[in-house]
Length: 259
Image 1 (cartoon, helix red, strand yellow):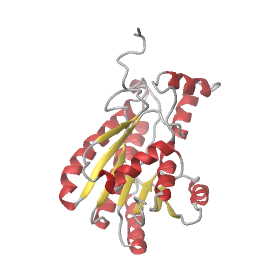
Image 2 (tube, one colour):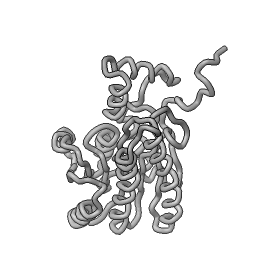
Image 3 (cartoon, one colour):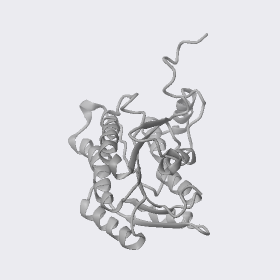
Image 4 (cartoon, helix red, strand yellow):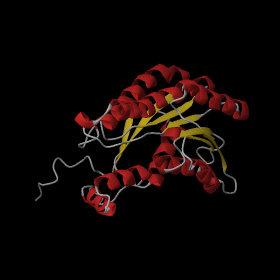
């Protein structure tokens, strides 16, 4: 198996994309350690603990560098190092720029940018080689909708973080890449749908799907498979890249022109 005995740290792995990544990594033989601040963590760990699966978790706020460093030291003492780091944890709250207060702005910046920074900085001393996978988005680097200024800004920043870090770490045999998802069926997307139409969020999901050439949202397992590829030696000549997984949603020049 392509991740056999690899020690993989996945942030935000209690639900959504992170859960899908953890599930696929376990399928390929990795030892998975989830860092998550959610109360869902315990239930998710129980769900993932199947025969032959090695999965562990720390309830931690990645904005807190002291807590993050402590987790990494525990991982080092238990497993002897880290082979794969997936910076998946992120937040998204919709608000127009002129209406957004500093608290909401800082919430996005602190989790999506500083949290990724903290975890990476704390993990690197325990990585002799391996792969770092950052979860960016098509939102920010490629597209954007109304109300996404804070989220889009942070996800665009992660592309710059990925490319610059890839250059610095290439001599240490650590590859750094980013995944740029379009719409994946996650609690985050469900939350956006509820914010948009509290009475009928499913109508919002169906509307999103109709704008995607494949006519559906992606699954967390599909995203997990891409993360596993980038984490494994199968992608040994890929670094500093942002890989789009969006069902073709960023392909159309316009949705209104047809033959």
